[in-house]
Image (tube, rainbow, N blue to C red; front, side, top):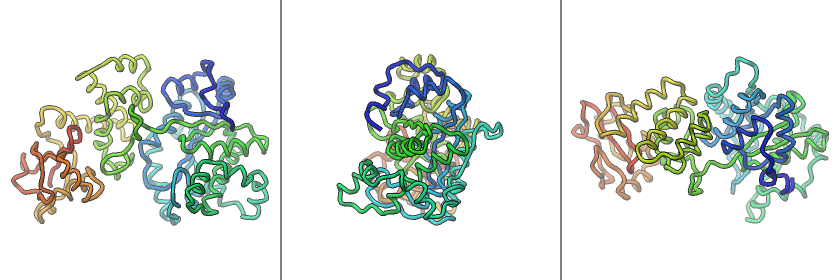
Amino acid sequence: MTQQNRKSDFVTPPRSEALRILAERGFIKDCTDLAVLDQRLVDGKVTAYAGFDATADSLHVGHLLPLMALRWLEKCGHEPIVLLGGGTSEVGDPSLRKDSRPLLEQHQIAANISGMSQSIEQLFDFDDNAVRLLNNAEWLKEFQFLDFLREFGPHFTVNRMLTFETVKNRLEAHLPLTVLEFCYMMLQAVDFIELSKRYDCSLQIGGSDQWGNIVNGVELGRRTDRSLIGLTVPLLTTASGAKMGKTAAGAVWLNPERLSPFGLWQFFRNVADADVTKLLKLFTERPMPEIARIDTLEGADLNDAKIMLASDVTRLIHGDDQSKAAERQGAALFSDGTIASEPTHVVPIELLAQGFGLLELMTQIEFSSSNSEARRLIQGGGVRLNGQVIEDEKRRILEGDLSAGDQLVLAIGRRRKALVAFR
């Protein structure tokens, strides 16, 4: 695809409701042909898919961008497909990586797909048959190697594949790129063709790091007489341009086993003022006029908007009950510092009896990803226990640290707080 096929050259206001919503809420980075996509969305139902490899047992907040785009398409009468990479996960996507992904065993892939499906099933209603959840192992494992090469090999040239950013960057850095990884882009392109054959799918949505892979599928469609369109959503960044979606403990996961509902709520409650309206557009379904009014708020009113954002996202991922519980927990920790009756984290009391270190506690409640990271936070003067700055890396939790019988408040910086109960 050439540069003139990208979003920046499409200046006509969209005629379709779906594309208008995606554009005004900030979901469009690049598209292989926005004008054609707009017309198809006007003419009738469009089937669109977003794919996710099973590299972990949970989706993270960055995955919400293409998933929310699919939700809006569904609301406008179109048909989404969420594709899980049970087949492609056995190969590994080399996009934006300097080294090869570790190869996963099939039992790991199956467990990861099960974990990812939890969040997807929360986001979509599969009972109305308008949304499909599929696994590309269904067709990729049907192919015989020689048959695959004969059917699709003639449509790919090494010359063209060498121009893709993923391949070019690896080679220019004199880093190895295995044949296995080199073939990944072929497999993702074949996914698009198979979905087109089986479900009349004509649109793929993915992150901007997937642009090369998506274009490859569109080009394969053209060579096999299928008119396909690719659209990318922007990477999730802050107003300052920094990559967003990480906490001290790592990625902002969607599964509660990875990150508690309150942890997700607290992440969005703590976002910078400049990012509130952007995230309301992307991760909530609040009307645009309401979001425009929020954009004018300051001070305490803007904090209320952050609470609304955090509660909306938590409700979307974990349901109404968990959202309300997280908001109650947050109300206690973000108000006058009083201890709430409901803790944000519960730690086994046996650990306290054995002499529990502060470093271990910070890791246990996901305020740090390791003891060494917890140590750096303490050295930086950003850790407070019950309001007191902690300077001793070897500090241990004592019975005297507990109030209300079994609770303490741990904070990192001004915004990250936890009410920990030992029970």
